[in-house]
Image 1 (cartoon, rainbow, N blue to C red):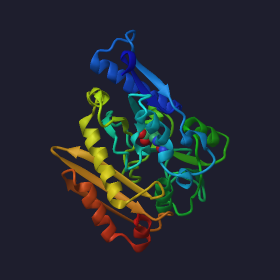
Image 2 (tube, rainbow, N blue to C red; image 1 turned 60 degrees about the horizontal axis):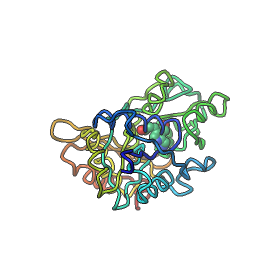
Image 3 (cartoon, protein in one colour; image 1 turned 90 degrees about the vertical axis):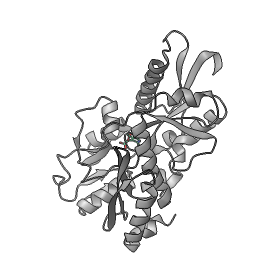
Length: 304
Ligand SMILES: NCc1[nH]cc(CCC(=O)O)c1CC(=O)O
């Protein structure tokens, strides 16, 4: 660390800044760093994902667009750690980079904004989302509903909804809550809409070798870390990418983990779901089971 200042890299969106602030506060508390003695400096790094707003992420290069510039700064020693929404972090990471810690997971559910429930959406409603998972799950529950591409940060999306570009949208409760929008939208039960793998979890990456890793590990929430790694193992075993409509939620229970997952076709007309209880190998095991039972149209999307 240069000059006893711990430099924390982050994207510059309002949500990213709130999350980076949470990590800064946790680090300061864990290590007793005083606010006036160097402490933690937040370094904002603009990513390609922030710059390109008019196309679906899957179309222009996937989740790496959220991390590439942050990875570069970390590898170059310009920052000591980077903060990410784990949902946006690719399954396969550079070998020199380690997920050193995760904060305690927030509400994992999605919230619907613009209607009181999925059933209450008007016939033929237009719902804005750029998540293949949400579009597929919505199509499965409501084949009459149309989804349209919807990007931009949370405020941008809520603005588009407010001017009537769409009838409704779906956003992660975790992001809304962290932005102080506790009353925005209605939560969808997770047995109706299983969340994205890693939804609601904030992760902190450091170099795999170096002093920052251990400093950051001090704020790790072990159960969150374990659950999210199991969900990521499922993604890896599925060879899923950000085009793949996949939902998963793991929970640590006693000394084991309980994992639920769902794979769908793009419009959700076919799907397969399952659950498995066990140790940290359940991600790969459930992936194998789902692929074996999946209708051909689903399996095709997960061929890697
Ligand atoms: N893909 C964008 C993204 N990445 C993380 C969150 C919300 C916070 C989280 O899930 O941890 C969001 C917005 C959303 O899906 O509503």
